[in-house]
Image (tube, rainbow, N blue to C red):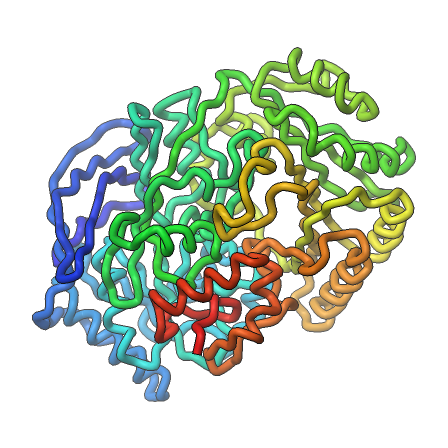
Amino acid sequence: MDCLSYKSALWVPCFALIRKQNSSHVHSIFSSLNWRRNGDQIQSSIHIHHPIPSQLIVLKSPPLLLSSSSSSIQVARFLNALSQKIKSSSPPLSTTFYTPLQNASFTSLLESTAQNLRGLVLFNSKTKPQAIFTPLCESHVQAAVVCATNTPLHLRFRSGGHDYEGLSYISQTKDTFVIVDLSKLRGVNVNIDDNSAWVQAGATVGELYYWVSAKSKVHGFPAGLCSSLGIGGHITGGAYGSIMRKYGLAVDNVLDAQLVDATGRLLDREAMGEDLFWAIRGGGGASFGVILAWKLKLVPVPEKVTVFNFTKTLEQGATRILHRWQQVAPNLDEDLFLRVLINKANKTITTSYSAMFLGEADRLMGVIEKGFPELGLTRKDCIEMSWIESVVYIARLPIGTQPEALLTGKSLSRRYYKAKSDFVREPIPESGLEGIWKRFMEEDTPFMIWNPYGGFMNRIPEAHTPFPYRKGTMFMIQYLTYWQDPSEASSSKHIDWIRKLYNYMAQYVSKNPRGAYVNYRDLDLGQNNKEGTTNFTQASGWGTKYFKDNFIRLVKIKTKVDPHNFFRHEQSIPVLQ
């Protein structure tokens, strides 16, 4: 099983790869690999990728240092089997394994992309991984799945570490588990001729945006606003961004995918079939297989876009203006994405209207003056820039930051937090907003984000992808509370506050079911048994909130493609018994 030679983090791989699977074997074709550094063409080479060999090949590598506990024995057997499946590569395969006793860097790697510090303080011998595996190519992932299927060992897969409950790097089940960290699989290959890009799962949204803009100033992609999101997991939940009202979600613009299934096969869209292809585009991560790459449809953007960030306080009429925003935002020109960030500052409430418009400032002013004059926006509040510059601006990177900063792939800040979500179908009255303000004043660092719908989102049927919140949704709410004190008392205090706010909001949001966004995972909605088993009735509690009627179809597909529930976690799609 030949694997690509490892390149340092300074090298960004761009790949073109298609694999097909038939009933008897994996077909392999040549895959050309172009390596880039800072946008310059360096070298080109050809590799052949083979299916997992049946023969056993023993690696000559140092033994792993593990304790004698039963969980460590499981991990040792897994790693030994894995070394027998994979031929020696450069660097040695042993350098891709990290265990607490073998590697001083185990903890730093574990925490490297963990976005929610709340998950890290939960670590103990039961919740943290016994090892981390960082595959260097697709065949390594295939081998890991094959070697784990016949053991009690559980695998968790991490691309960007943004799971809101930390489920890509911690576990609240009784399973002994290993993290398969996909951060070294981060190639981006942009093909402007056919308006597409192949992106590996370990790449970030920011890296995708950067490499698209490096090829074309008039192409973009409708994914997330946070530049450090791992593209692999991000798209599995739907993935919205600043051009969703024009082009929909990321899942609405996926052309193909590469996935390793529960038997270790590497499948593309044709091989996996349309049911599974439907399920992975919005059905949540780590239930159906390991996403290794997405083929994305690029969308046109103008050479100049316009942004602004315009703030109103309670004393400046924030309540009245926000009430009006609810009525108009879903109906404004679909070139305009105008969300609201709600904070507490200086003993008052601030509502910041953060916008990105696909066009120049003069046309934007016409849209605002006609549809939302109550905002009081002026021409001097608007800033024209390129689309890639707007990505940097919306990501709240420091003013003057160059787009190359998107290649770092790291979040600028990590905090303890708890989040929840809702979808709203009718305007919240001013009295309801005042109830929110009252509760905001009781919390240290409360935060809400209101994201407008309408436009393209109204034209997509609920069953088009597993993500169902389309026509009739006015806006989505994200609730957040942050804190710095790692103590259990502090955590309990802030989580109790957000739960009370969430309960208060029940009267104003979607009902039967009360909707939730799977990418803002919330274990308060329920979870699978700690033994790692799933139950349809139990899982319906959160499944219908995330997916509405699409949950039933997801369960049927899961039962067909992964009947033994190899891919599982606290809120994975259940298997019908």
